[in-house]
Image (cartoon, rainbow, N blue to C red; front, side, top):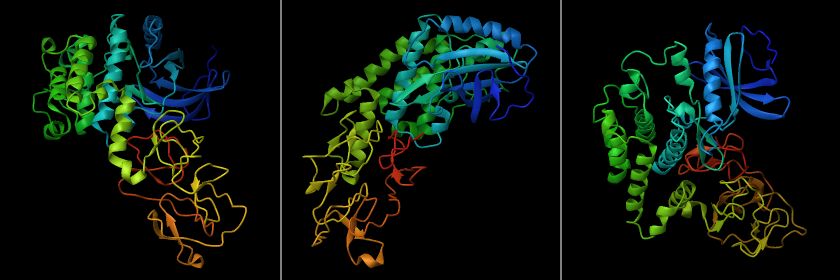
Length: 433
């Protein structure tokens, strides 16, 4: 491939067939961009490493890693599309996710979310360990988030390749991040990846990253003990043993212990079938438990079966806007356009702004779901319900609904969203990073 010589990398430039669209991340060795494949018309993640005179050696080693990973096809492993060099820089092209776990850690994370990440990355490690691959660089920045609650492990072989090329991948003692003790001294193993994954899980729960010399109790121990039940704590603490021989020797061993702990934990609940639920179902169940009354979660999405309310214009789990409440709505009628519930006395649909065919002769405000008066003073004392987009009497567009119980705000419509649970805004359909 013919490459242009670039002293400075800028958005809008092209590297081969890839046009740089947006800078989306910074790593230890370079920058990650969202790029457009001008030939295929798709978007990818393009990572550009720092310039080095050893780039030919790095690429040679890395291509061996690609050939090895080409035999691995797994839903929790980030797919590599291309790797090449330009201007003494290595660039790597991979599928594009919705950001990394490192970015997601800026928001509060539930235990079920952290367990979901742990389970999926263990699945990825089980697959690569079958091929005798040690990742060597498990950290939040290399765990990529995708729709439908999928996470994928990326940057396989990068640490190994850069070590071979003579580049240091650590920093001064005591700040080596997610490396296992033996890895710092140049002896990584399957158990080293287990240690790093244990650090990632601990940090997701507590917000604190344990530091060298990794002596228990770590910072954040009290929060860890409060948040994680004893069986699961024992699994994570074994993964974080300082001595390599005291840890799980590989991902299969840790997965067995983890599933056993989750089974025993969930057997204590009234519905023992919960132990069979995938991560998404755990998350939906936790969401329903917290917000069922607030959002009136009486329905399931017709596409993905996630819990929804008839006030939602979009499913927060799959984003569809095709849910119909004909014959199901708690209101007296259904809007012909959006098929959400309406009342006979309303003049407009409060969800999609459709005007009725005839003006109502009466208006009623006895419904308990009315929460406050319309902000339009010319509308009189007519009331509106929570989550209405428009006043059903005077068609005034209402301000975004903000509730302190929901922990996020949609960037597009500014309404409150359950950012720790949803993949899409339930009100406008915008994707939630």
